[in-house]
Image (cartoon, rainbow, N blue to C red; front, side, top):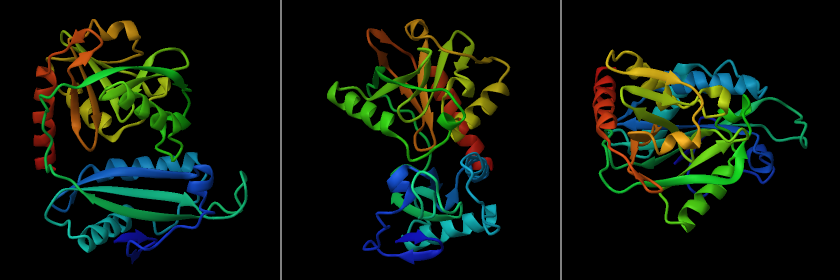
Length: 280
């Protein structure tokens, strides 16, 4: 069952081909993890969505309170039988039909869809996870590049490149040739006791899991947190590299070209992340 503007619809329901999210990428989305009916990091997702809608000049309905959207997500989870297991929730907001590049209205609609997930909490995989740079196209750093919009052509082409080259993921560069993120998450490097991630001004996604990890790292006296540009030359000098998103939590990278990485810091941070989830 899919939730369209509060109405539950079966799998035979379709959006119009004039939908602006389809026609122009005029849509935003949040990918959210639910664990046994608990929506993880919901406050962060909600405020990121509201801020993104303002940047996209979408009209935020008075009904779009945090409580209302949370209840609609819970209604959708219940309709699909996901109250007692993990699920992936995709909350999409698109501008309503009308107009070409210039919309006829700034009013919006929302869609909530869910899929089953196997893991309730986050775990570190010990399997080989290999990445390389994707250099065919670049991220243009701006406020728009930090949003989760339907304009994901670079990520799609990069994912095809990764598959063709037997890679698990690729790292994206911005137009200044700095490493900004992976195809599906934010990037962190560990060197000694320093943990580094690119700043939002370099064009990386304002990831919800990125926010969680930054808060955890800043509270740990044994580590120095640095938010600064990452050169591709730094990758092979790092002790660890990991990718973060709300679905996997922390994904350790085991190999970049001829360089292999440890994962001890990632494991430690993941334990602290799971504790934070249990306490909240």
